[in-house]
Amino acid sequence: MTTPTSDSRFDTFDGFRVETDPASERGDIILDRPPMNVINMGQRDQLRAAFEALDRDDRVRVIVLRAEGEHFSSGGYIKGFLQASPEHVSHLADNVAAPWRASKPVIAANQGYTFGVGFEISLACDFRIATQSCRYALPEQKLGQIPGSGGSARLQAIIGIARTKDVVMRSRRITGQQAYDWGIATEVVDDSELAAATAHLVDELRGFSPLAQRTAKKLINDSENATVAIGIELEGHAYSRLRQSDDFAEGVNAFHEKRRPEFSGR
Image (cartoon, rainbow, N blue to C red):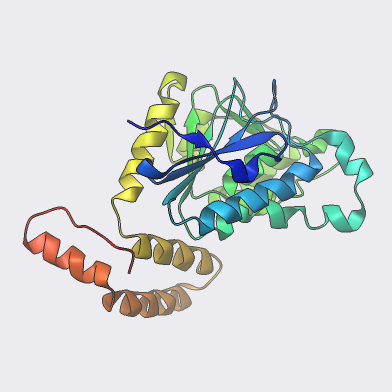
Protein backbone atom coordinates (compact mmCIF):
# COMPACT_ATOMS: atom_id res chain seq x y z
CA MET A 1 0.00 0.00 0.00
CA THR A 2 1.45 3.35 -1.01
CA THR A 3 1.17 6.65 0.81
CA PRO A 4 -0.02 9.65 -1.23
CA THR A 5 2.48 12.49 -1.32
CA SER A 6 1.94 16.23 -1.51
CA ASP A 7 2.55 17.58 -4.98
CA SER A 8 5.16 20.37 -5.04
CA ARG A 9 3.42 21.94 -8.03
CA PHE A 10 0.71 23.16 -5.66
CA ASP A 11 2.74 24.36 -2.67
CA THR A 12 1.54 27.96 -3.04
CA PHE A 13 -2.18 27.13 -3.03
CA ASP A 14 -4.24 28.57 -0.19
CA GLY A 15 -6.91 26.68 1.73
CA PHE A 16 -6.25 23.28 0.20
CA ARG A 17 -3.50 20.90 -0.77
CA VAL A 18 -3.01 18.33 -3.53
CA GLU A 19 -1.76 14.78 -3.11
CA THR A 20 -0.93 12.33 -5.88
CA ASP A 21 -0.57 8.58 -5.60
CA PRO A 22 0.72 7.24 -8.94
CA ALA A 23 0.54 3.63 -7.72
CA SER A 24 -3.22 4.06 -7.22
CA GLU A 25 -3.49 6.39 -10.25
CA ARG A 26 -5.25 8.86 -7.97
CA GLY A 27 -5.00 12.59 -7.41
CA ASP A 28 -6.65 14.21 -4.38
CA ILE A 29 -7.63 17.85 -3.91
CA ILE A 30 -8.09 18.26 -0.15
CA LEU A 31 -9.84 21.27 1.37
CA ASP A 32 -7.87 22.21 4.47
CA ARG A 33 -8.81 25.52 6.07
CA PRO A 34 -9.90 24.60 9.61
CA PRO A 35 -12.33 24.55 11.17
CA MET A 36 -15.00 24.92 8.44
CA ASN A 37 -12.98 24.80 5.21
CA VAL A 38 -14.29 28.15 4.01
CA ILE A 39 -13.48 28.73 0.33
CA ASN A 40 -12.25 32.25 -0.36
CA MET A 41 -12.51 34.11 -3.66
CA GLY A 42 -8.93 33.59 -4.82
CA GLN A 43 -9.05 29.93 -3.86
CA ARG A 44 -11.66 29.30 -6.56
CA ASP A 45 -9.15 30.20 -9.28
CA GLN A 46 -6.57 27.96 -7.67
CA LEU A 47 -8.96 25.03 -7.40
CA ARG A 48 -9.66 25.35 -11.10
CA ALA A 49 -5.92 25.27 -11.83
CA ALA A 50 -5.49 22.19 -9.65
CA PHE A 51 -8.26 20.28 -11.42
CA GLU A 52 -6.84 21.21 -14.81
CA ALA A 53 -3.31 20.13 -13.80
CA LEU A 54 -4.49 16.76 -12.50
CA ASP A 55 -6.55 16.26 -15.63
CA ARG A 56 -3.35 16.68 -17.68
CA ASP A 57 -1.32 14.37 -15.42
CA ASP A 58 -0.89 10.98 -17.10
CA ARG A 59 -0.20 9.36 -13.73
CA VAL A 60 -3.74 10.14 -12.53
CA ARG A 61 -6.80 8.18 -13.64
CA VAL A 62 -9.30 9.41 -11.03
CA ILE A 63 -9.56 12.75 -9.22
CA VAL A 64 -10.95 12.96 -5.68
CA LEU A 65 -12.22 16.13 -3.99
CA ARG A 66 -12.32 15.72 -0.21
CA ALA A 67 -11.73 17.66 2.99
CA GLU A 68 -9.96 17.51 6.32
CA GLY A 69 -11.96 17.72 9.51
CA GLU A 70 -15.57 17.37 10.49
CA HIS A 71 -17.03 19.44 7.64
CA PHE A 72 -16.47 19.42 3.89
CA SER A 73 -17.05 23.17 3.59
CA SER A 74 -19.39 25.71 5.16
CA GLY A 75 -19.28 27.64 1.87
CA GLY A 76 -17.60 30.76 0.56
CA TYR A 77 -15.97 33.67 2.37
CA ILE A 78 -18.94 36.03 2.62
CA LYS A 79 -17.07 39.36 2.71
CA GLY A 80 -15.23 38.36 -0.44
CA PHE A 81 -18.40 38.84 -2.45
CA LEU A 82 -18.59 42.50 -1.44
CA GLN A 83 -14.94 43.05 -2.29
CA ALA A 84 -15.05 41.41 -5.74
CA SER A 85 -16.25 43.25 -8.84
CA PRO A 86 -19.64 42.41 -10.41
CA GLU A 87 -17.75 41.20 -13.51
CA HIS A 88 -15.70 38.80 -11.39
CA VAL A 89 -18.61 37.29 -9.49
CA SER A 90 -20.63 36.85 -12.70
CA HIS A 91 -18.05 34.25 -13.80
CA LEU A 92 -17.74 32.30 -10.54
CA ALA A 93 -19.43 29.28 -12.10
CA ASP A 94 -16.58 28.91 -14.60
CA ASN A 95 -14.14 27.90 -11.85
CA VAL A 96 -16.60 25.72 -9.98
CA ALA A 97 -17.34 23.83 -13.21
CA ALA A 98 -13.74 22.57 -13.40
CA PRO A 99 -14.64 19.03 -12.19
CA TRP A 100 -17.42 18.88 -14.81
CA ARG A 101 -15.01 19.91 -17.58
CA ALA A 102 -12.29 17.46 -16.52
CA SER A 103 -12.05 14.50 -18.88
CA LYS A 104 -11.37 12.11 -15.99
CA PRO A 105 -13.86 10.82 -13.40
CA VAL A 106 -14.14 13.09 -10.36
CA ILE A 107 -15.43 11.93 -6.97
CA ALA A 108 -16.60 14.27 -4.20
CA ALA A 109 -16.35 12.80 -0.68
CA ASN A 110 -18.76 14.84 1.44
CA GLN A 111 -19.12 14.94 5.22
CA GLY A 112 -20.65 17.38 7.66
CA TYR A 113 -21.59 20.81 6.34
CA THR A 114 -21.47 20.88 2.55
CA PHE A 115 -22.92 24.32 2.00
CA GLY A 116 -22.91 26.99 -0.68
CA VAL A 117 -19.96 26.70 -3.03
CA GLY A 118 -18.98 23.48 -1.24
CA PHE A 119 -22.24 21.97 -2.44
CA GLU A 120 -21.97 23.58 -5.86
CA ILE A 121 -18.50 22.22 -6.62
CA SER A 122 -19.64 18.80 -5.40
CA LEU A 123 -22.58 18.96 -7.80
CA ALA A 124 -20.08 19.59 -10.61
CA CYS A 125 -18.35 16.29 -9.80
CA ASP A 126 -19.38 12.99 -11.39
CA PHE A 127 -19.94 11.06 -8.16
CA ARG A 128 -20.89 12.21 -4.67
CA ILE A 129 -20.37 9.95 -1.66
CA ALA A 130 -22.23 11.39 1.33
CA THR A 131 -21.89 10.39 4.97
CA GLN A 132 -24.70 10.12 7.47
CA SER A 133 -23.47 13.38 9.02
CA CYS A 134 -23.52 15.20 5.68
CA ARG A 135 -25.83 18.19 5.31
CA TYR A 136 -26.16 19.74 1.88
CA ALA A 137 -27.52 23.29 1.58
CA LEU A 138 -27.63 26.37 -0.62
CA PRO A 139 -28.21 29.00 2.11
CA GLU A 140 -27.75 32.14 -0.01
CA GLN A 141 -31.36 33.32 0.51
CA LYS A 142 -30.43 34.06 4.12
CA LEU A 143 -27.97 36.65 2.78
CA GLY A 144 -30.39 38.20 0.31
CA GLN A 145 -28.70 36.32 -2.55
CA ILE A 146 -29.08 33.26 -4.76
CA PRO A 147 -26.58 30.50 -5.61
CA GLY A 148 -24.02 32.00 -7.97
CA SER A 149 -21.85 29.09 -9.07
CA GLY A 150 -24.30 26.85 -10.89
CA GLY A 151 -25.92 25.31 -7.83
CA SER A 152 -29.59 25.87 -8.65
CA ALA A 153 -29.14 24.87 -12.31
CA ARG A 154 -27.25 21.66 -11.57
CA LEU A 155 -29.58 20.75 -8.72
CA GLN A 156 -32.68 21.26 -10.86
CA ALA A 157 -31.26 18.94 -13.51
CA ILE A 158 -30.97 16.23 -10.85
CA ILE A 159 -34.03 16.63 -8.64
CA GLY A 160 -36.48 18.76 -10.66
CA ILE A 161 -37.96 22.22 -10.28
CA ALA A 162 -40.25 21.63 -7.28
CA ARG A 163 -37.59 20.16 -5.02
CA THR A 164 -35.02 22.72 -6.18
CA LYS A 165 -37.34 25.57 -5.23
CA ASP A 166 -37.83 23.91 -1.87
CA VAL A 167 -34.09 23.67 -1.28
CA VAL A 168 -33.04 27.05 -2.71
CA MET A 169 -35.93 29.33 -1.74
CA ARG A 170 -36.14 27.95 1.81
CA SER A 171 -32.36 27.50 2.32
CA ARG A 172 -33.28 23.97 3.27
CA ARG A 173 -30.71 21.48 4.50
CA ILE A 174 -30.71 17.98 3.01
CA THR A 175 -29.35 14.99 4.92
CA GLY A 176 -26.96 12.55 3.28
CA GLN A 177 -29.67 9.91 3.26
CA GLN A 178 -32.20 12.23 1.66
CA ALA A 179 -29.61 13.27 -0.93
CA TYR A 180 -29.17 9.61 -1.80
CA ASP A 181 -32.93 9.04 -1.97
CA TRP A 182 -33.31 12.04 -4.31
CA GLY A 183 -30.46 10.97 -6.59
CA ILE A 184 -28.01 13.70 -5.54
CA ALA A 185 -25.58 11.32 -3.84
CA THR A 186 -24.26 8.17 -5.47
CA GLU A 187 -23.79 6.46 -2.10
CA VAL A 188 -24.47 7.19 1.57
CA VAL A 189 -22.16 5.65 4.14
CA ASP A 190 -21.29 5.91 7.81
CA ASP A 191 -18.76 8.63 8.53
CA SER A 192 -16.13 6.05 9.46
CA GLU A 193 -16.52 4.41 6.03
CA LEU A 194 -16.03 7.48 3.82
CA ALA A 195 -12.34 6.93 3.07
CA ALA A 196 -12.83 3.23 2.32
CA ALA A 197 -15.89 3.87 0.12
CA THR A 198 -13.97 6.50 -1.81
CA ALA A 199 -10.97 4.21 -2.31
CA HIS A 200 -13.26 1.41 -3.45
CA LEU A 201 -14.90 3.63 -6.08
CA VAL A 202 -11.49 4.84 -7.29
CA ASP A 203 -10.33 1.24 -7.75
CA GLU A 204 -13.55 0.32 -9.54
CA LEU A 205 -13.23 3.21 -12.00
CA ARG A 206 -9.57 2.39 -12.64
CA GLY A 207 -10.62 -1.04 -13.88
CA PHE A 208 -12.34 0.39 -16.95
CA SER A 209 -10.84 1.67 -20.18
CA PRO A 210 -9.61 5.26 -19.74
CA LEU A 211 -10.73 6.01 -23.28
CA ALA A 212 -14.22 4.61 -22.69
CA GLN A 213 -14.48 6.51 -19.40
CA ARG A 214 -13.56 9.82 -21.02
CA THR A 215 -15.95 9.16 -23.88
CA ALA A 216 -18.84 8.24 -21.57
CA LYS A 217 -18.37 11.35 -19.43
CA LYS A 218 -18.20 13.71 -22.40
CA LEU A 219 -21.18 12.06 -24.08
CA ILE A 220 -23.36 12.27 -20.98
CA ASN A 221 -22.34 15.89 -20.33
CA ASP A 222 -22.92 16.90 -23.95
CA SER A 223 -26.30 15.16 -24.01
CA GLU A 224 -27.55 16.68 -20.75
CA ASN A 225 -29.90 19.18 -22.39
CA ALA A 226 -30.37 17.38 -25.72
CA THR A 227 -33.50 15.68 -26.96
CA VAL A 228 -33.57 11.90 -26.81
CA ALA A 229 -33.12 11.76 -30.58
CA ILE A 230 -30.02 13.97 -30.51
CA GLY A 231 -28.63 12.04 -27.55
CA ILE A 232 -29.00 8.77 -29.42
CA GLU A 233 -27.31 10.29 -32.48
CA LEU A 234 -24.34 11.49 -30.38
CA GLU A 235 -24.14 8.11 -28.68
CA GLY A 236 -24.00 6.34 -32.02
CA HIS A 237 -21.07 8.44 -33.24
CA ALA A 238 -19.17 7.92 -29.99
CA TYR A 239 -19.85 4.18 -30.07
CA SER A 240 -18.56 3.98 -33.63
CA ARG A 241 -15.31 5.74 -32.72
CA LEU A 242 -14.70 3.46 -29.75
CA ARG A 243 -15.34 0.46 -32.00
CA GLN A 244 -11.97 1.19 -33.64
CA SER A 245 -10.03 1.47 -30.38
CA ASP A 246 -7.40 -0.91 -29.03
CA ASP A 247 -9.23 -0.93 -25.69
CA PHE A 248 -12.41 -2.26 -27.27
CA ALA A 249 -10.48 -5.05 -28.99
CA GLU A 250 -8.76 -5.87 -25.70
CA GLY A 251 -12.07 -5.89 -23.85
CA VAL A 252 -13.65 -8.29 -26.34
CA ASN A 253 -10.63 -10.60 -26.34
CA ALA A 254 -10.42 -10.60 -22.55
CA PHE A 255 -14.14 -11.44 -22.32
CA HIS A 256 -13.79 -14.47 -24.59
CA GLU A 257 -10.57 -15.56 -22.92
CA LYS A 258 -12.17 -15.22 -19.48
CA ARG A 259 -9.45 -12.95 -18.13
CA ARG A 260 -9.20 -9.42 -16.78
CA PRO A 261 -8.62 -6.86 -19.56
CA GLU A 262 -5.46 -4.75 -19.62
CA PHE A 263 -6.58 -1.44 -21.05
CA SER A 264 -4.06 1.00 -22.51
CA GLY A 265 -6.29 4.03 -23.06
CA ARG A 266 -5.91 3.85 -26.84
